[in-house]
Amino acid sequence: MRHSLLAHPRRAVRATALLAVAPLLAASLAACADSSTSTTGSVADDCTPAHTFDTVTEGTLTVAADVSLPYVDVDDSTGALGGVDGVVLTKIAEMECLTITNATIHGSTAIGSVQQGKSDLAAGGWYRTAAHGKVLGQTVPVYYDFTAVASADGQYDSLDQLEGKTVGVTQGSLYVSELQDALGKDNVKQYETLTEAMTDLKNGRIDATIAGSGETGYQLSQLTDSGLDMQPIEADDRLTASQSYGEVNFPHTQGNTDLTTALDEDIETLREDGTVQDALDQYGLTNKANFSGK
Amino acid sequence: MSTLVSWLPDLLEGLRHSLWLTFVSLLLGLPLGLVLGYVAELTPSRPVRWLLVALIELARGLPALVVLYLVYYGLPSVSIVLSSFWSVILAFTVSNAGYVSEIVRGALRGIPAGQLEACRALGIGRTRTFLSVIAPQALRISTPSLISYAAIVFQSTSLAVAVAEPELLSAAYNIGSITFEYVQVFVLAGALYAVVVVAASRLAGWLSARTAY
Image 1 (tube, each protein chain N blue to C red):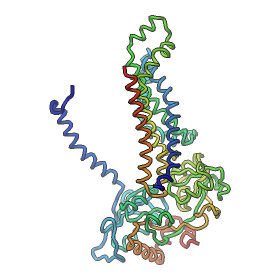
Image 2: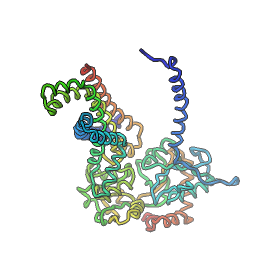
Image 3: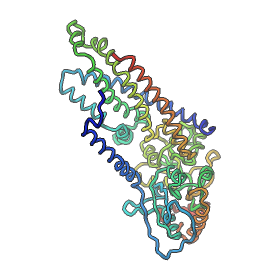
Image 4: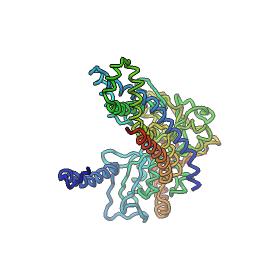
């Protein structure tokens, strides 16, 4: 015998209540999903922007922040951006009379956020690459980074030494394909964040990590008594990133040429007035090559 | 289209790895769950039953991801370092044993108690009663549920992405993080998951119809 809700008023009431509550629940869950978003900064009424360009949301620069010091940090209490990229972007927002809305997004998902039009740009030590250039706008280099190998006692500094070893890299990093070719797919383990890779390195599950010098140095500084150290990787034909410095930039919405122009010119201004150098010094990227790329 | 095809080798390798994780974790979890379920249901000792039921409930109550993190990140603090593969296997085996034992207990309850009494009256020993009378029927009753559960375990292997194990979701994520074509690659990965799960569901349905009393 089939039961109908009408034949059972209590069930009907419960079902109606459930239907009424479901959208509220969905809305509250959606709100929770956005809880890592915050807006900071204020704009004076008489502020005159250095450039005119469209943003995802009018009056604010939406930043997909791949939080990873020394590149980007978000202050838990104020939501303000820190890290080298964060300091520079905060200045750019001031110059353009914009507030900053930042969404904390890990790894390559930050790039996806820009690609999908949810964010104006991504911050987090992103290098200029041909692959990014196909789907994103890229700015002039803000500063430079070099490729580093972290291992126990810093014992490895070349690809030759890493043959037969297991190397950890972050998903979507520009090293992945070339390292898979050079060391074999099974020897390259991909992690969502460098922190996870470093944890496995410390626990002995992998032999080394390969990542940018700034991020690697910062991670090592957080692991006390780990016995780990890093070395710049020797130039090797098999790894493009080993042959030159990484050009850190702000990947942004492709096709928004006004935004590209504004970011490029603002970056040049901030490199000339010492803002970029100060930010590099503040976050420990003190090698002169981090600024000059040489 | 050619791009999608070019991703298939990596995705199929990930699928193979997911199936392997499913197989090994079930290979270890099924017998463990079978023994747990049998002893918990049929032991005459109440303390033993309570203890086993408590363990089963704990294994079922803890999310598999929590168990996985405990194994992967927790055990190294007591100098036990398992590879990501064995961490996943251990975590899933614990989880599987809990769920399988519940399925087995349910199946055992479906066998009329009179059969046990008949075996005793005929002087058949406990082990032979279990192997020749109880287990075949319990297996027959529980097989459709176990196949459905195996499909859930297969889906759950996607949690292994959290410890950088190169299963299907991880393979899809790696491709997406390089190509940024997340929609396409996740749709393709989802289709591969669906093919396996739908096939398992059909098999469970077919077996359920064939084994119905």
